[in-house]
Length: 77
Image 1: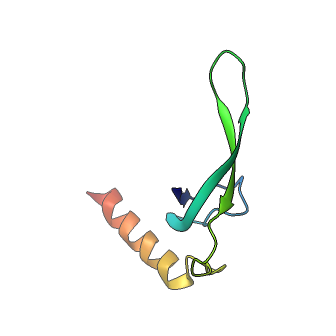
Image 2 (image 1 turned 45 degrees about the vertical axis):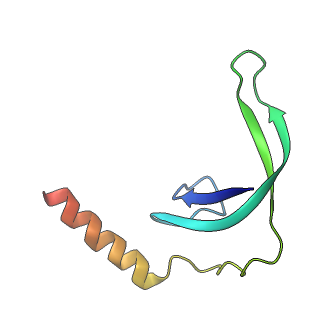
């Protein structure tokens, strides 16, 4: 089993709008080669059963506001 943490990425519908989110435990169900020589693979994942459901609206508006507050503070130092 592997833990999945998703980062903000406009290319994925599963990614959060900002920051990172923990998505739970997954099992690798398939390993598909992307290139023959480079050793790159795409993996298919299946979420492990009996986990608490992930909230669809994460991060919340408050969490997004907090992210931007912290990010702007870091940018000034």
